[in-house]
Image (cartoon, rainbow, N blue to C red):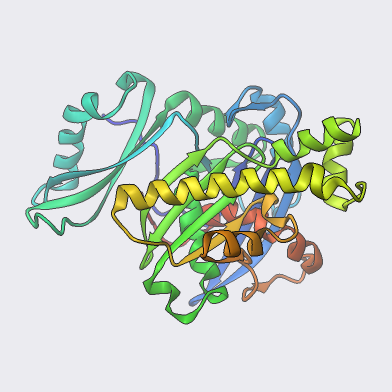
Length: 359
């Protein structure tokens, strides 16, 4: 039997994005077709608890999640988290359209040895039927995702240590795609029918998800993030890591930092985004991407959206997923305005409460 990597639709649960530098959480409710933000929280990650998106110290991560637990209504017991990085594999495979889910599972298990570059007893897999293959209507496109079971189980254990029951372990790039619908109002009216690239720039990892008409066409994880900017501040101005992080946030830096630190980092960021876009265009045969939505802590650097618009020729906005959403009275709206772009993955995970989407 497959070890399930993903679960089906679940009760209301908090989306928890376990990152290298912080844990971010979002809780949504739904009335008819409207979402409401019930709570959100960001807590710094304990130093050394994560390395390259893998949990190194389950107890330390669990203790951070427990701080999140105290900011979420006690009635909410379930959570959704996600895996990412080099140990996560997602592939579109083509299967006979007449196969049932049970038959698909059996067939995928038979073929998995050639599809997954890890021993099958070390991975958790799941799949979802997508749509009929356009070039061969006798086949159905099936999204197969797999991750190292160790990565899945460490997240489950950290959530449980923090006081939550894990209901879903998703893939970060698909959680990012899911939250894209909340940002479409920031784009021109035709965005729902166009090719939209979501780029989430975290501390150590940049996620790229490309969508067209609500369907994910392409995903990619790149090892690049805001930590490189922090380390440049650290080395140039003889600050501790914590001082550099704080200076980055409050802008307490010498006037010449723009040329010494900011401009070189912007150039690196531009190169990373351009490379990701080019790889998508090369593999897809598409001519262009119509719109770009950037998120993550690094998206808050002043002028990043304008830089990408000017240099790539792609209309770019910073994600504001809660701009048109009602908020509970307990939500700090000013803090949300500042931190909202960092919450895209957590929001995509929270949306798993309401409809099964991509696994």
